[in-house]
Length: 205
Ligand SMILES: *Cc1c(COP(=O)(O)O)cnc(C)c1O
Image (cartoon, rainbow, N blue to C red; front, top):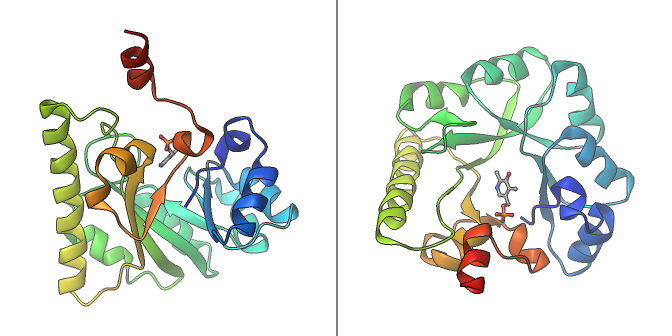
């Protein structure tokens, strides 16, 4: 699931997503609903996941442009459900970045979201935010994130709930921890041949 947000990191979102479509890649992710709409208007096919918050006044765009919205927290799940029309969503689980996502230890609340009648849950994900270099300390943190995410998936499966597409790896996750692969990897920076900040420092040293 290539990350084509921020105009594909400046390279041209429609241009890049079109080429990826041509190569058979039928999923992508963007930051905002406006970016998603731009891709659809440019003829991009497949699943388009909006990673950030969409204002309720723009919920209609999710349906008009067949976009999948991220559930960024529990109260937002309620808000999306209250829209009254079916919306496709992926649940974001917070396993340590503490920016967006439902905390991984809120198992009951996560399970309850599956019973919201207007939410069509087609995926679940987390973000490994310390994967760029594999030092002992960062590896411990990253493995802890992956384990917490795994416990959420197992809990949902035990309840008979199906999670859809599972994804946790950004570029450096895929490069450094490919053993943790899921159904998708959300690859941005690596797609464009750019190094992470840490890797640039290593390269110039
Ligand atoms: C931007 C973004 C990515 C892509 O990250 P890269 O480090 O550029 O590969 C992955 N996941 C989320 C949630 C993002 O916002």
